[in-house]
Amino acid sequence: MKGLHGMATLMATTTLILLTGLLGWLTLKAVSAETTRSQQQMFAAQALANSEALLETAIAYIDNHYMQNGAQADAQLWANASPQDCPANKAPAYWQCLRIPLALLPLPDFTDTLHSSVTLVRDGHNTPHQVLLVTELRLNDSHAGVGSRATVQAALFVPVPYSATLSPAQSHPTLWPPGIHSKQVQRLPGSWKNAGY
Image 1 (cartoon, rainbow, N blue to C red):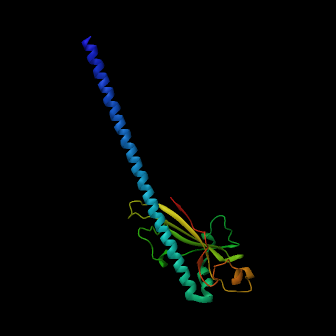
Image 2 (image 1 turned 90 degrees about the vertical axis):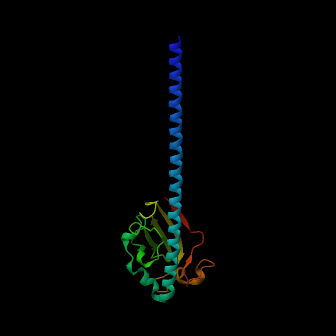
């Protein structure tokens, strides 16, 4: 009888130790998963902040270009527009797309230049003064969050000189939205969008 009682105690103790070990292992896994999730959120936030910084730098670059080059600025900026830079839903017959070389811009730290971009998109036929600026930035292998990326976009008004090919709505300052100056690069109110990955 004593042998059976001792055997039952041993079995119960062994089971209890196994259950305690399993609970500890599950707790460790949960803590590890939460830590990984927190790190990924931090890396995504870093990529988003860098992409927003790149967007602001690109806006400053575009603004400076239009200020420095006057009436020729628009033609000069879009001279290198390429259909291959257009999104799939923007048919090149109407849409102009331009990728600004990253070498022209001061970049945020940890920018993966091979997988980051600054792209301008506009309907060159109907609304050449309205431009969508999209920045996509990926963190490089010098950052602990290598591969984390974020995309940010903002719509801009850019000064387009009057020509016979433009309708009055495209060129006449009084027909532009209130508060938007037709001779300055300005952000379209409420157009900011971002997406962290």
